[in-house]
Figure 1: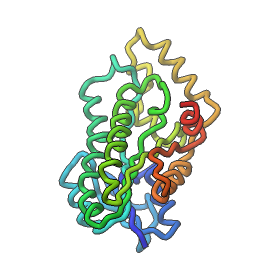
Figure 2: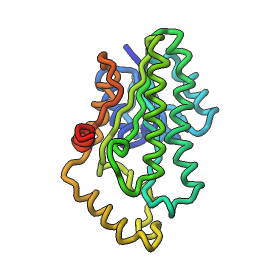
Figure 3: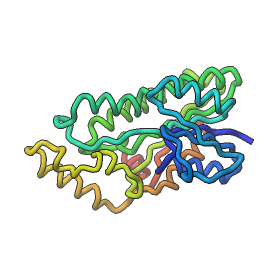
Figure 4: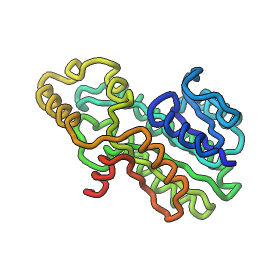
Length: 249
């Protein structure tokens, strides 16, 4: 029975992925910044562990608690929607600390056991923003593009040791808390400098009016495919809108 450690499992893609692997008889280490009861079912094959990817101590503690694992899924992330001119640099650093440096930190923590064992898979969840030209996402896209580049190079470094690195690129999902978390619950027009307001409104209207969206289950299935793929494929778009973008690209 194999073991997967997934970050950011309190909701959305991370929770769906934890449930997906658990249903397929894997041991699941479901990590979240603040563990809460009732988020995931009680099971002898599922452990909820505290892990904040921006805090090195909690990363070390979580991996010690987990013991040997076969797969790391870096899902934890923070969203950001705004025009760049109106985004404080403190927010830029916050986004990168979680979305980019957090992914690197957890990956670095797991690599020694993967390399020494000669097997293991790292799956980094990015976003379909890397596949097209998306407005209002300059900071978020930059953080995810960095992970795409990191993973592509990492895959080459790990290949001689039988270890794999992949990315999963989810599309837009209306059933997660992405939009609310991206603006901390504030209306977008309160965060966008006035000269950008008409353009920003149109961009959001176009986004919410698109005809295809992603479900949490699409992402869980794509992570599963990435873990089990033997063809050497690096990137896995998740959801019909992401697949369409990938095909167009």
